[in-house]
Image (cartoon, rainbow, N blue to C red; front, side, top):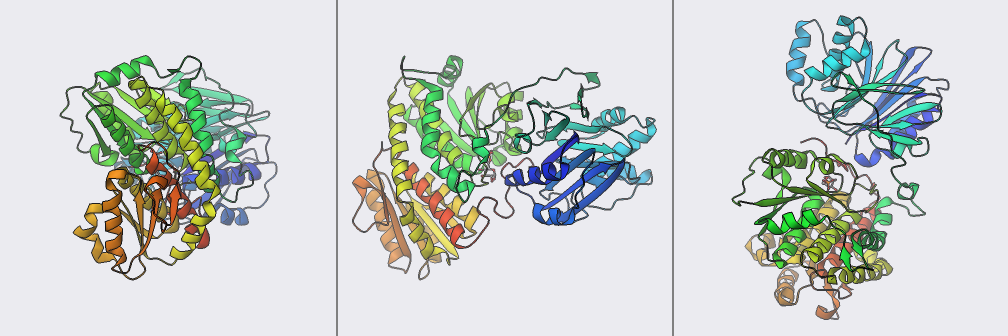
Length: 593
Ligand code: G6P
C-alpha cells in the first residue's frame, strides 16, 4: 500500500521516479505525485489517478539533484490532488512522502493549530510535515534533530522520504512500514521495495524500525534513537526475472503458469533427495509436536490457504483452528495450554496479522511466519520463519503464493510425520497443474459465457469448499462480479433464493464421499434456472462436466479446482477489458488496519 521512490545524486530522475512508481503500482494506489529539487528550489506535481496522468503533467527535469515520488492509497481523505503526496508544511520548508498511518494525528493537529498552523489536506501526512517544520525551526534548522524529535511525537507507522527546502540531503525515517536504501554509482536511492532500484543499485540497506538519517550522492548516514548506526549492506534482492513479463500479457497469467515451477523450487528448498530428509529447523518441528493446538492466522487468500493447513494438522492428529487475523486480533482467545501459532502471509507486512503477532509475542508463545518476502516484518519478529520461495508476485490477486503456501504446509506435514510422500504428491500436483495450463482455452470459453453475470456461485464440500472460497475471491477481486462460495449443504438454507435464470454456479468435485451430494446440489440449482458448470477430478467425473482435472492424491485434488478458478477470473477480467494486475481499490500489501 502506497509506494515511495526517491533518490539523490546523478540520475535521470524523471525516468527513475515515474518508472519506479509504475513498478510499485502493484501495491495499489489512487493518486500520485513527485517533487524534485533543482538549483535548490523544490518543484511539486500531483494528481488523482494514475502515474501516466502524473507523467503527462511533469516536464523534463534534467539536472535535478534530489527527487521523491509517491503513489497513494487513500486512507485519510479522498484521492484528490490536495491529498496526494508529497505533502508540505505550512512554511513550505518540508516536503515529504509517507507510507503508513499516524494514529495520533488528530491530537497533533490540535497542538499545531494552537501554534497557528492551518491545514490544506485531510491527510495525516500533512501533520508530519508541520511537526517536522516546527522542530526544524526550534532546532536552528537541524534536520536530523527535527526528525528525531518528530519521531518521539508520532504514534503509528511511517516510512517517509523528506526534503528540507534549502538542504542538500535527502532525509528519511522509518517505523512499521518498509523502506529500503539502494547504493548506486553516483547516486543513492530509496524505495518501498527494491523493484524501482534493481537496475541502479549495487547493494541495499534494509531499514529497521526507528531508523532515520540522510542520503548524499556519496552515501548514507544512519541513526536509531539518537545514536549513529553502522548500515548493513546486502546484495541484490530479487531477480529481474520476476519483474519481467517474459512475453506474457499480464503478471497474473505469468504467475499462474509459474505454479509448477514454484512447487518444484519449494521442494528443492525443503527436501534433500539424497538423504531423504526434510530441511526444516528441528526445533520448529519439536515445538509443533509439543503444542496441544495449532492456530492459523491470516487474511484474504492466505486465510483460505490456511484452511488447508488446518486440514493437514488434523490428518496429523493435532487439534487445529484457523482464524481471520483482523477478527482474532480483537478476540485473541485460546483455551489451549500450549498453542503454537502459524501466521501465513504472502507479503509478511499485513497490519492485522502483525497486530496478532504482537499479542502472541507479548504472551511469549511460539509462532511460525510463512511468508514470501524475506526479512519482512512478520518473519523478523517470528520465533520461526519459512519462506515459500514463490518469487516476487506482482499481480495484486495472489495465485502462485497461495499454491506455494499450501505446498509448504504439505511438506511440513511430511516432516512432522516422517514421510517423504508429500514430496512425490506435490511433484504430481505440479504435473496436473501443467495439464490445466495446457487446456486453459477451455476455461477461457466458459469465461466468455459468464462475463455478463451479476452474481456467480462456487459450491463445494469439504476441501472443495475451501477451494470454492478462493475461487469466489479471485472472481470478485479482478472481474468485479459478485461471487460467493457456499458449502453444498447450505445451498438450500438461503442461497438458493438468489438463483435466477442463467446465474452461473460452479460445482467443485474432488472428494469421493461428497461427490454425489454435491452433484445433487448442482441439480437443484439447475432445475431453478442456474447455468451450472461442474469442475471434477477425473475418477469422479461424468461426461457432461465442464472441466475435468487429473487425479492427484485426494488431499491435493481440490487445488486444481483453484487453478481453474484463477484462470476463470483471469479470462473474465480479460474479456471485460479490466485492469487485471491492478484491480480497483485493492492493494497487494495491506499495511493499515
Ligand atoms: C490483500 C491482497 C490479497 C491478500 C491479502 C493478504 O488483500 O490484495 O491478495 O490475500 O492482502 O495478504 P498477505 O500478504 O498477508 O498474504
